[in-house]
Every structure is written in structure tokens, then in C-alpha cells.
Length: 351
Image (cartoon, rainbow, N blue to C red):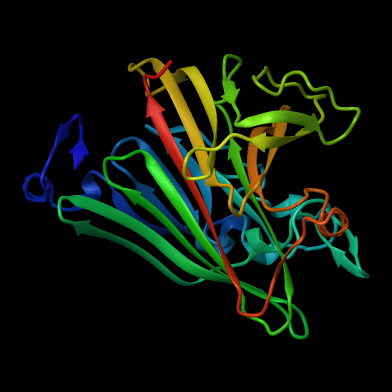
């Protein structure tokens, strides 16, 4: 593996530490007070700077993520509140949404709260508040590479209703500032079921500063609301208590030879630990457009709610009825499954 600017064999590393967790790895923790009490978190440290916390209580979503102990993600004022407090009605999702690097929206509804075919659907669906089962957190040597893997199963189901099962795998390798997410969603029921999925990836201070800029893969950008100005979506600004959220819909995505699109956040003066100073930092999110053909940008440089959302999706963010109306609603037949793949990379020094 490459670690601390040189190559090491497994035995060279093992000779220098009592446990691999000295330099990186995975461990399980539990929060103990307030509305966070009882929430388990799985900490992953890559040893190269990137670290993050996976939340089994929230469908294996990702809470705080940091580089060199400096945060790159956004945390909401709610904290990692226990999902038992979740209320699925209307906009109540906002009272218990944790923020963090990843909030999964779905599985049968994502986007605005509304009524679809007589059924009341709350904001962004239930996935972010559904605990995972069969959770495994493992670190193991693969020759001279140390692989970290967190996995589990999340199910959205009800008697006489849809049954969607997601198997999620999150992986990192010691010495590499990267995480990958592979989700397989299956219709475990016996009738066709809607499948709506939006990956709410949230970046925050101090990755987001006045000099931060963005690179998007889209050839076309338009605001969700006609009244929203188009300017400003490529850079960041000071907190504004009066700022209203802006949502931009990106289309005509440019992809690589694999069919993957990428969006980047770049801070030319990302602050590291005291005494070290600052250096350029770029965080790049890539995803397979085969199953995530849509891309949404949520821009909210408010005070307190100071966050940029980069959101690959398979659906209309206005909700299930809108997706049904515009013909974009994905339906899984009984036993059918789809695979969703994303990757996040952190790179230093590239201006």
C-alpha cells in the first residue's frame, strides 16, 4: 500500500503498529445522550486523511465526513437523532434529517411531499430513517492492501403494499482518499413497485468558503422555479440569513467511457490543522448514469443552513406524481433489481 508518501508491504506496517487501527481502519461507536442516544455509528479512517461515519440506524447513510480532521460535509442542527423520532407526514422529515455526507431519499418516493393516487407521501421518503439489518463492518488484508467494507440490508415494506429491499456496500482502502457506494435495489414483492432514488450528497464549511468553485458535467442548467435566478450556481458566498434555497436541474450530462458523470467542489485554500496552513482541495463525486441519469443541485448558503447538495437521481424531484406524469417513474417488476454506483474522491494540491 501507499501510505505517508511511500510504499509499504503488509509485514512492514504490522511491524510498526500494535493494531492496524493505529493508522486507519473501522470501529463501531454509540452515542449516549439527548435525541441521539442509542444511535450507533461506524467510523472509517483511510489513514490518508479521509474519514467518515456510517449510520446503521439511517440505512447506512454517511454522517460527518472529514479530511485531516477538517470537515468536508454539512451537519444539520438536528444531529444524528434516533430515527424513532421520525414523522413521515408532510415536511416533518426536516425535523429529523441528520445532514451528513449522504442522506438517501427513496425508495418509493423522493422529492416534494404530495398526494399520489390517494396516498399521502412525505418529503423524500423513508430511506434516511430506516435502520439497516445484517450490518457488517470489516477490515481485512488483501495481499499488501487493507480493505475496509461496511454492508447491510435496508427494507421499505408494508402489508398490502410495496416491498423494496436495498443491499448497500460502502468500501475504502487504507492509504487512498476514496469511498465507493454500491447499492442493489430489488422488488421483493409480488406486484410491480415504483423505485425512486435520490442521493442527497451534502458539502459544508470549511470546504465551502467564498473562494470555493464547482465543476458540473452538465451542458444545460435550469432553475426548478422560474423565479430563481440562474447566476451563482458555480461558486459560493458568505452566509446570508435571508437567503432562500435554490434548486437547479442539470441535464445533457457529459460522461466518460464507462458512462459515469462527475461533479467537483474545489477550495483553493482548504484549512488543515493549526500550524499546517491551507492547501488546495478538490472533492469529486462520480456516479453511473445508467441508473442515475438525473442530476440536481441544491444551493443553500444561508446562516445555519449553509450547505451545497449535489444529488444524482433516477427521478423527478417534485415527487412521485410528477415522475408518473412526465413518464420518468421507474417501476421494478417482481424480483427485478437495479444496481446504483457512486464514488467520492478527495485530492490535495491540484489548483
